[in-house]
Length: 292
Image (tube, rainbow, N blue to C red; front, side, top):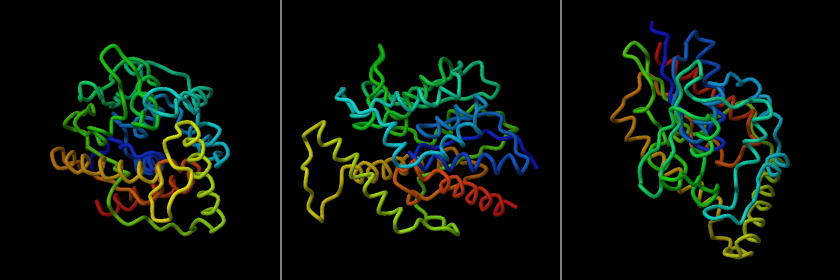
């Protein structure tokens, strides 16, 4: 059976951590990744893989807790978002030196969206981290990247599963990982304790309070039946990216589709790295077993 693959990784915020578990299972089963394409968190994982620093990245993610994640959020009053997104990338660069995409051993591309021209921007050359920074710029949350051609935001706006951009020979299997699938959540043996759930709610409340203080646009008290700012972003992006992923799969059918539930966590739950990694491993093993 053919073991060379062209791998496409979707965006999905923290759920994209599952990509790491998927990649490990694929490699454990003898698959060779010959090229990668990714959007948003898929671009992050794909870029780090191309730089050869996956184990360092995984170790760093596993060490994150709610407090450390909050400290990585560089709030700003800048235009177009309230998080700069620079602090986390600079932190990652402490153990992962940047490089040009064209110099990577594995062909890689990242997708962003030019919100002015309403067109995709596909990075196939230049700085890996510049490409990642543009691809992760979630509208209204992370400030856009200003260029001479316009403002670049998250690639998931137009193409969250860039099957049409991965560098692929006809001999290679096309493998896609969609972390926004409308499927039931994978149930792992260990569920999150009630105490951790309470801490998670406190974590989001803390960020929301900070956002309200910066913008003064949201009410400080919410009615019990209202939706929070972050839940609204999470749900809106889930609907949007799932819709364009379905279209991508329809027109560029992968040989193997690995699906992660969009109910696995909220998009900002990066402190759930270990759980999401295991979910990725479980989903990959499940998809491979069905393939036979």
